[in-house]
Image 1 (cartoon, rainbow, N blue to C red):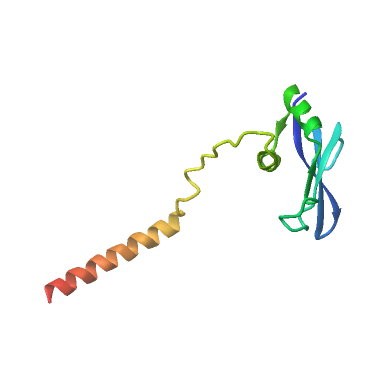
Image 2: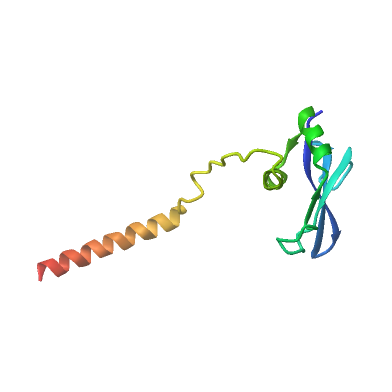
Length: 121
């Protein structure tokens, strides 16, 4: 059974509220879970202590059992000091898309032509 520590959405429309839960990865996002480990309320200010509440001991126990946190929960655990920060390597994120690269090449070609025309005069 592949266990995940993840966020389960609650709250009403446009008013999200999340439970941090330990659940089987095959279960639906908001479906059955094994244990509630904390809460996350994104509507509260970032400096509020009530924004993220976690039972660190329970989370540590699940991590020791082999549960894998999702990306967002892993970031919360890093902020709480439970888990060491891992390097995220996404080298393609900073690269522009194909069309942007084509536009940049066209702009560079036009600039080179304009420079040659200015030198020829």
